[in-house]
Image (cartoon, rainbow, N blue to C red):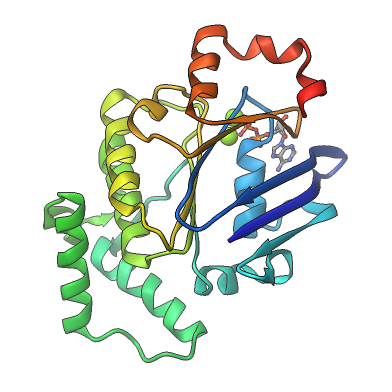
Length: 252
Ligand code: ADP
Ligand code: MG
Ligand code: MG
């Protein structure tokens, strides 16, 4: 599904990603962990097509296509979804309207007709049930006045509605309390499927108690310095990121 080879990216004068290699198959959930400032969010943004980074070397193949060559809308239309670390609030736009618009912008790119009201209502009902959510949030403005947990829930709902093939969730550093961790992990677990790859970016080992990843990678200094199974997350829990400094280079 996703093949990243020797990816280098920079922002202005700083090289942030320095040779990322990563391969994710359909059906897998990968966790990307690492200390603050290691480049986790940058990697997520580069995959989603944010333009504030310059790719200086390497390649990314998604579903057999050159991902880096695709514009941001095309990536979405081809099934790439990125949940941002800080969800935006959009006042005056109802959640329901926003979801419909997001689906229709993908349909438009694919040259498909707009989703009918009936199909949209049915899809929304299906996803709300899948995620155990009620519809009370649907008529409120997108994320406006939402609690941290509600924003997380909403982000997971957006992902469910768009039915991506590759989902990247950036769940880094900031204020994920235990409820939010559970919301994210239950959502991810509900959306696991043989056709879907999910990359969860996280600073916290604790998230991985709920989402059991197929593979865990540790990013440090813009490179993946360790890869392993879920036991690697436990090792990090135990030793912290400082153990990477000893001998990290040799296992990269
Ligand atoms: P993480 O998500 O692992 O905490 P980031 O990807 O956010 O790390 O950042 C990696 C490094 O790159 C940090 O030193 C950060 O300050 C820097 N950085 C990230 N984005 C930008 C940007 N747009 N412009 C300049 N520096 C950036
Ligand atoms: Mg950070
Ligand atoms: Mg980050």
